[in-house]
Image (cartoon, rainbow, N blue to C red; front, side, top):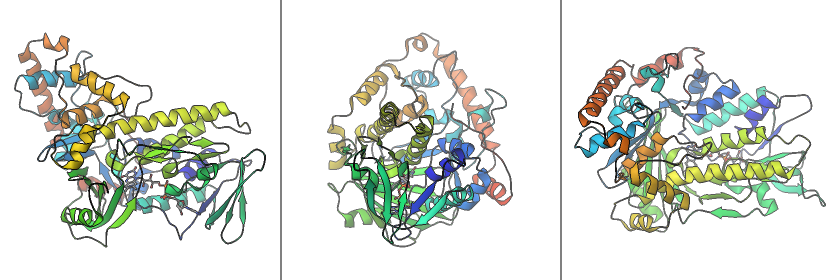
Length: 491
Ligand SMILES: Cc1cc2nc3c(=O)[nH]c(=O)nc-3n(C[C@H](O)[C@H](O)[C@H](O)COP(=O)(O)OP(=O)(O)OC[C@H]3O[C@@H](n4cnc5c(N)ncnc54)[C@H](O)[C@@H]3O)c2cc1C
């Protein structure tokens, strides 16, 4: 992603880009679920969506279904898009909360077009041409094969002048006085020199480690530290959504790409052995496993500095937040976008570095808080879940929970990834219910509100019924050389 973006933006005679990769080491090869931000990435690079989808075995993703998270048997959906429509400037969820407190039977997801479409296995592209029309509320992202995606972007970068060098970095060279990186030596001999370096070496973080940049550990908030991943056969049509099923000491993902399903069990090694975790994963597969589960060890957190001297770490080398909300590729794009907006040129001003490091830390913290909420707000009985319930959560999340519990309100921070609708979905899904209704709504006649909601629910269902099947859209869209460009952006 980094080489592809730079090749697009810095494609000038003065700058040459070299990508060093080791086939022997390979890539991590997981990272199959994305969020709508990915559409922006394609747009910026000028990637034709249908081409990308064909090359990566992609399906469309409308959100994530969470099963057994707040307690066993519970189920909720974190949709892309919105619940209902805001009425008279008041967020929809306040109207729903009022009705719900009055014994109203429909879940908030029954008013969300993307969620309704997902449940019906249907799909539609957003259409912004008529403001307020149902299609303007649709949003989507992709599920794809991460290895095919890396290959697709490599070809994209090479076609735009990036030189790819195959080899294993065995030494990182620094200037004796300035401390700047000057080059990397490959095991087969050559030194690749450069003025600026991107550390995209994954969990190894080879370049940042050469500076001894400390690691900020968040395991006390996100205790899972292992993943077991395996693909499985699938005969049914792919669902247009990810599934996340809570387990005794973690959770399992189910991500449908065109021809198979990606599965993984994320768990805490303090609460479960590898053998047990493997059984949980295999028992939870919907089809025959295509190979043996692969173990991946990880720590949750980030580097204290993402940009140090003349080196920026992007991807797993910068930090890792587990894939519960499919946010890692988003954080990569953030890293690239923020770097380009602060592009240093010949200047190596520390002001640019400081701004980059401050804003990336914020991005990581905002994602972290939503992940921690999933673990903290639970009513399950197992020791792992009791442990999660008893942790002292980040102060930023404490404030957010207090404000929501008081009247369904949210603090808004600048440049936040997740819209209120995401927080509403997870708060309510995890059974965090505001104690008091919004005062303006509380004063309205309930019959009027109920009537508005019912009209909306019917209209959305009717619209969703008219959408084509997810599988049908995939067949049509990916078969042709359609040049359909990205249509839907987050609001
Ligand atoms: C279990 C799990 C599930 C995930 N699921 C998702 C998801 O659903 N959605 C999402 O957005 N993200 C997900 N991620 C994160 C996602 O996989 C990564 O953010 C993404 O793949 C980028 O990885 P990377 O390029 O930083 O590292 P890697 O893929 O590890 O790439 C590192 C690169 O550096 C090279 N390299 C390393 N050392 C050397 C060396 N010495 N010499 C030369 N080259 C070297 C390697 O060859 C490779 O090309 C998941 C991660 C994990 C662990």
